[in-house]
Amino acid sequence: MDIFKPNQTSSNLMVKYAEEKYYKPEKDKDIERYLVIYDIFIKARGYYIINKVFFFFSLISGLAVLLWPSLSIFATDLGWREMGFLNSAIVQTTVTGIAALNFAIYSHYKKRQLYAENLMRVAIFSEDSLGKIKDYVVKEMERIDSGFSFGKSLIKDESDHTK
Image 1 (cartoon, helix red, strand yellow):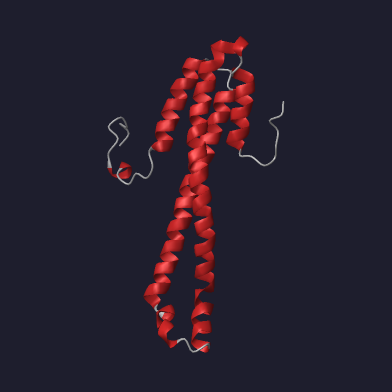
Image 2: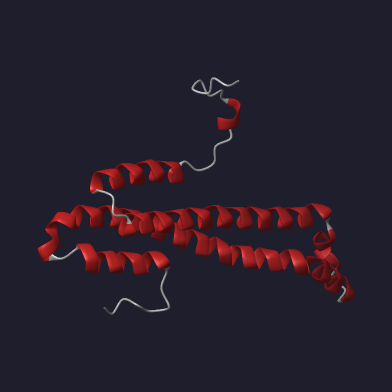
């Protein structure tokens, strides 16, 4: 198997492994399992791309937050009086807020990528029937795709009778 290469994502390795294991003419009965795995891979790949973009933005904005005070002193020392906005607390707060937003988005999608990759592991290595795996995958994909939810903590769960 020529799938073991260090410069790839876990999801890419797992989909290649699944292709070797399930997507062969003599194993047509398992093509649906491969379809489920590939569906998860598409989701994991999307999350990977988003979190890499925001990782880059996080690095840049994190450096901006660290270097901003030095930049404002440097501009003052060079006599750049027209760059007075560099000393503004509003601008510094805005730069910090943008950095925090970038880190939050990166973290959010990194977790989603991790969940999707773990779901791929379950689908590949589980010995459960395809029916059980499909139901579990659909339920977990729905949970992964749910995104931010602020209202769940305010809604009373009617099934909990212990309250």
